[in-house]
Length: 254
Image 1 (spheres, one colour):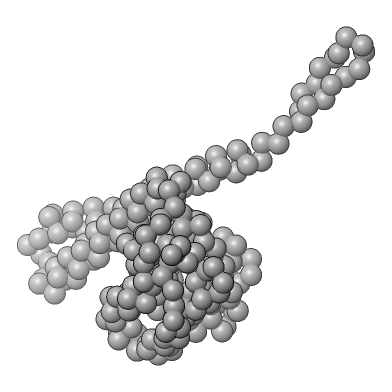
Image 2 (image 1 turned 135 degrees about the horizontal axis):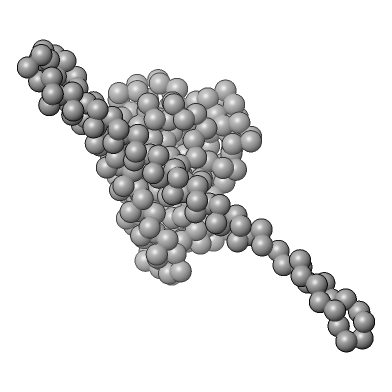
């Protein structure tokens, strides 16, 4: 708030709403802090285990050495996934002002993403259920980014769904949009968390997400891809029943 006395004796009061700028600055600060934490934690583990291997090599039996090397490998891969996701986010944001216009068939991308996730599904004892409109029109899209979106949604559904339960992928036409949905049968997300799960590094259950291999960036990447495609993203979730994520993408202009 600023005030100024005018010549006629009246007082001019000027209000400036800085809430958006403050929120953006807070998001930047949080992002730097979270990114630093996500990289610092596995780095500390890597340093600790490699120092032990180097300094106590003669006293470490082969099974213990193999276990230590396995931890080093897993933590290095975790860091790699975080860095790759950060690079993806940066690339998507750089392209956000250019809406994709290529006419892309969605069903082959869905099948490709399901094939990529088959091993994970087998490990968790889960099956895929497809409900895809055979007359599905092509969408205006970047095929690579839509594959990435599908990969993140399907992987998340497998990761947070209960082992042995199916993951349902559906796609149908709704006017000028194609409605894509991915549903799991898991713990679900409490209402107070739903609005924040697309934030970078936001996790409902930090320890569980890390143990399952999540980077905390998957849904943020999905959100940015949907925004770049001028689509819409929504999340329906019930605690104890599961989560369904809806994505609306524009149909390609003939």
